[in-house]
Length: 214
Ligand code: IMP
Image (cartoon, rainbow, N blue to C red):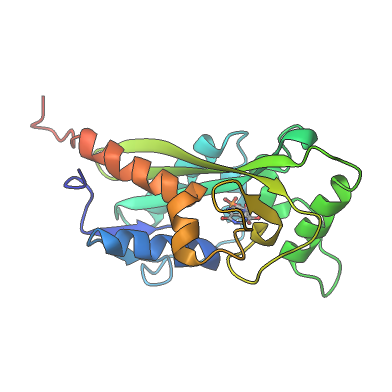
């Protein structure tokens, strides 16, 4: 099914946690991952403005298009992801990365997690889901797929693995937080792993539409 996925793919993210998760997924199907640094795409101050849309899908596609161009045409994968909490009307959602304002000396992740716990302090319904949209762009094709995983927000952080909100997300599938789960378990049931599976399936089904194609 993955015959249409090129041998080398630019995985366009500045988030080290995402790269750590995505690299082995591509390696497992024999694809080489090129990251932005090795592709020679320096970080620019305006990059955050690329993902200003209201949906994960639109943001992922905007990032993939941008980095496809910026890399000089490498087949490019970009993800946009985040946490949606039912009792918060879907927040932090597409704004998950900068949900809170970090105090001096505080990490963005710590600030985000503190704000989330605060927002749910008196809430019994703690259900949420992680969403990941993955976009693929090359010279001939553009496509976007989605993966999701459900869970509940804990009352305190648990576990040291993963990144971002993982210590606060008790996975329905695993019965432990995504920071307690090992990388294989997170890849198997996680939103990014599920989006990756959807991507390989979708690419297999979408042939390149070059000038000579139908
Ligand atoms: P993006 O770079 O705009 O896609 O922002 C993604 C943000 O969502 C991250 O900075 C995290 O705060 C959160 N997030 C996305 N995926 C995960 C995950 O797998 N675990 C924990 N937090 C995540």
